[in-house]
Length: 408
Image (tube, rainbow, N blue to C red; front, top):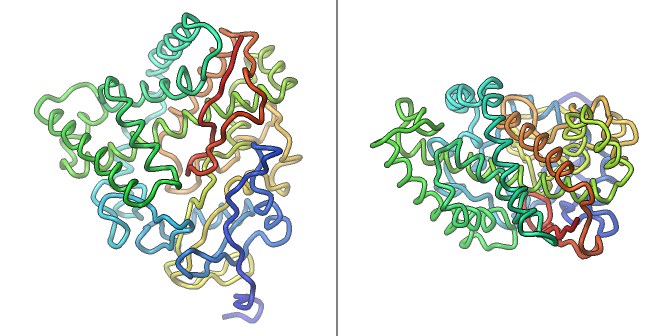
């Protein structure tokens, strides 16, 4: 070890900040931003007694996310929150077949290549007319029911649920079941037993679905993979995509609308200029950063020097994305929502490196069409309750709002 590389083993480790500022629900936890300002790579105490690292600097995060000396495998990482990560087979062994989000290359590469063929930019663009149709159908229903409405239940949740159901070939009639299971899985107030039960319920449902598709293939993503993967692999891939494919986009639609309604100047600019929609989506993802509790995480496979500090083999690193995406060394005036921000697309909300979000183009299409159609359909859209009465999803792995009462 070189003399100028510091482990600072005597540092008093921090605890992971998880509560956002109640006075500004769109900002990161204040402690995260203080860490970034003083020490963007700092020691972090984990619930199981492990002492690892917390990253809050943008360049440090990019370095770690792209470095193959760090692993995503949960059985090699320490959980940053009291409840361990939940997945098939628990967290004591290697990832289950098909659970590609928790695999390193070359295993991850095999699945990624198969799935990339299903998520090409061309295929996503071909889906745009159907996505637009789904969005307008939901807005029609919302308008017919009349104000007030809960935007989460009326619009933000059903849109991505319908889209991912069509993509995977999952019957939308069962959406209430898988949405309920997903909420239990991602809510950190659920016990580990409750989360595992929900995961097993969802896996059992998808296992039956895969068996039906193997018997009678259709024109959907799962059917398209039948010749390359076995039933266990398909079930776990479907599980990852179903949860990730609606939970994140649903919360961005709702929380992004909340943020726009709280920034009337930016909202007016977006209404007036269609060309802002693409950059607005990127800026909202940067500004809000809904992956906010204990992730993403990596573990060092060997001693690694990062930013003048020595991360030892086996130490877990947690990336505080809400602070990382507001690093003033990367983004000017990062605490300001500016929908014309030219470099907003450099955010790390979709990750970076080989594990960058597989469905990011699909999410962008849903958000771009969704925000634009919502604002055009309801030009007088506004909150139906005081802002401080909107319930926030602070206990969930994916940040957002539980409800968003609106009127027009």
